Length: 543
Image (cartoon, rainbow, N blue to C red):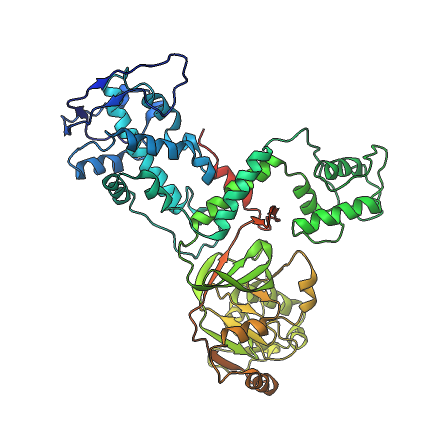
């Protein structure tokens, strides 16, 4: 632990005793009043200051920031007023309503010191001053930016990280005499965050724990009508979750129609493919307990602390695991679209950008990852690959290249540009919506529109396929009278690739959350990129 380079001497400390009831449990309501401390003075350099205490419970989270804070403020105490101390402690005591943890902010130690001010040694009250400041600085940072660093969890994180000057916020809170107001102003103010808090409250009221839960063992895929010794445990688990009302017969090993119906209902509720197939994804979701779901809510509250506090007045928000895009204007949802996103191997990244332009009848320039992993291996197997896929090859000067002339085992093959012309087979469909970014990700149409009827839609190579992309493009151009329905139809029929600048200021946010409240129900959806558990392992209270 880094030691601070100062020690406090508290001058004029006076404890006024008051009546106390020995039967009362210690709480934040102090039974004593501390007269305002006059000042703190810098003493000789004493490197062993904190080692006078039990460092297992009193080590500061950031001794350097605490030290710098007091130096900047001439070593004046800031927690001498009872109202300020109690205000901060109440926020720490109730911090689990935000999905954070009492023990992460010196909770137990503060409770003990605050409830025994009349019997504390002077050095304990010196320490209390330090701990309160340290707790505030950490709590302010966690509420404003999140406890975790998302760049260490996500392979690609392109949304700017939130920042905070916690020391400045603390100074303002003390000067205004309102700790709660200052902390409350740091929290996300988005509807989904508030819904998650409501879901957390309801979930806790109904109980985090549940009775004995049936664990379904892993195994091969079970299809309707199959015979499997896992069926009794599957039926029992579905019954525990309220999806199956039949008799869980330990002798019935047939995957019958009644259980299939229950599985489909469960799949529908969790945005799984509604096919009644019992594969690893459905089984893993069935195995999640109420405590697991509670952790899932906490994880999603944390995610919303990572996202920008101001999403803009007019924006598109893409919830990757929910396969849905929403257009928000002035806090109202204007329209929603089903989407397809990247597979687990080719994840759609988290980032934010602004719509730049729309392209009708787009060509498709194949991005580097697909070029490396799909196109070149395809050419090695079959030189007719390009004719079948209607892909043209160009050198650095834009000259056509004959596939038969290329050594597909050489590095030169990676230097060519591969492009598919506009047309009915183009994977981008008839329109794409561009928000220039380093990941080469955009919204686009698709000729494979039947795939939108599936529940699970992690089908793409990273870009976002949009159902009724033409309607979304029309909305984005609705402020430009020159591009009415007749004009757009003319452009589409021409087959000519046409780029149109979007004049409205519309942000696009690619986010990832797996829980939200829909009306009065808490909706848990499949964690398609397996990020919930990874995040929880880092988020959970420190041992």
